[in-house]
Length: 115
Length: 113
Image 1 (cartoon, each protein chain N blue to C red):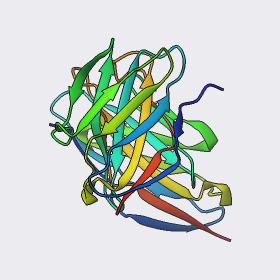
Image 2: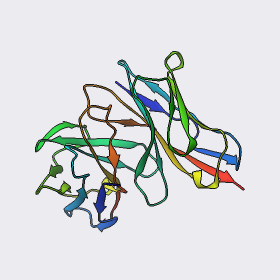
Image 3: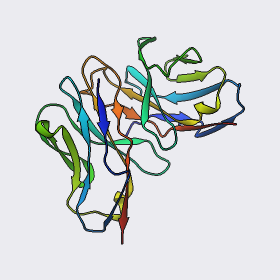
């Protein structure tokens, strides 16, 4: 069964460093998403991406964040200068369409720890 | 704006007992509702979804949920808990016109032998 994969599973970084989280969405999906979950809190939407453009973003997704689809298979989230409060589990998701009728498929997550 | 409330961050049931995980939503437009399950070290796996067809939705692993518009609820049930059901369960809402899902805080289900 096709699945979303994410690497690395755990990333530890120093405050102020740049990190890139990687995701491989399901191959025939066209819509891609990043969510995050700070420990003990809700899963929160960050950004959606379609046709090489951001289609929607939350207020969390500020100038420190960027997303890219560098090739036909990868989807990345970059945090330019990490802060302590960026420590969270980051989930990538993909869907066949942008309609909520078609569910989003989630990866296993990357746990980011900022020291 | 949409929101989701899951009552009970931790729920314990005995093996073979009824599982009831509560989810209430708020949405100004017709919602699409989802239950996801997360097993340790795994991603969010879709259990079931409501997309305005039948109000009683059956999902995988014997779970079902009923959409009750009057109560703005979408509670998840399973008649008989199994040890393998121990996991964290998330309720989420999506609506047309936005790409994002809004999630609840999750309920960790513990199944006692």
